[in-house]
Length: 335
Image (tube, rainbow, N blue to C red):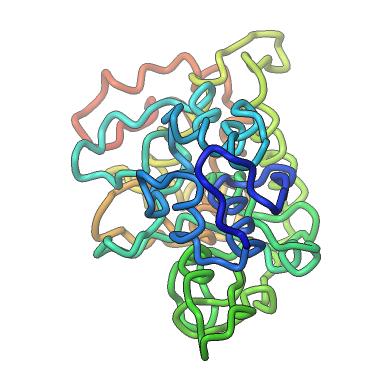
């Protein structure tokens, strides 16, 4: 009954939810049609019957048009569910080269693990409270951003993995698993590996010392993505792309720079923040692959610095210093 030739409207017309990720919407549509994601996608694109691995990063107009024809949702609306609109505000990655994860095109956008990857990447975060309150659970675009680490609604840290088996979240694979040949087991929220319902996972609340500041800074960054420029309290304006680039450089310095641990410790002491450690990644040496607690701490510290030293940091030339992999701040930046 659900089979429909490519180019004709599918029988179930689910619209994308607010801030929903494209892959999340398509998997919800697959479940609504009682099909696995790969099988469902073959209805949209018979020429490419396998669900695209990096569809959230797609710029392929043919794919977007096929989705429009099958769902009745405009190409512009479909495009708005991808991560590509962030490219208007976030700088492109330029130092990862061929060793970088394929889905890592922009700074602050986290890469995710796919079945053909030998490395576990925890780039899809979630809030159990939001998922359990959704009438139909769905995954938000902002949960793919490295500086988004807390849920402003439930005031808890986001989670970035299954809390039972510690594997990355892969809702496409969740919906591909059919246990006991019962179709009603198709779901986005049960872990494909251990069958744990991530909606019941326990989140933790961040330290309360500056939590309101953390939420305020995160909201500021999310709103900045929708603007062309940022204006500081002195009335000076900066391009959004430059701002996020400087914030990224500062955050990676605090995390990985030659004196990163020392600078991080000093800044935590200066701002009254509990010191924390950074687990050095085995591969893909970038902040986007760090776990959510580490990124929360880094953005907390970097946010304090940017608030106090925005003008100085925006005009600092990060590239004319030493040959460390992550250029340091000026010597007098913290005097």
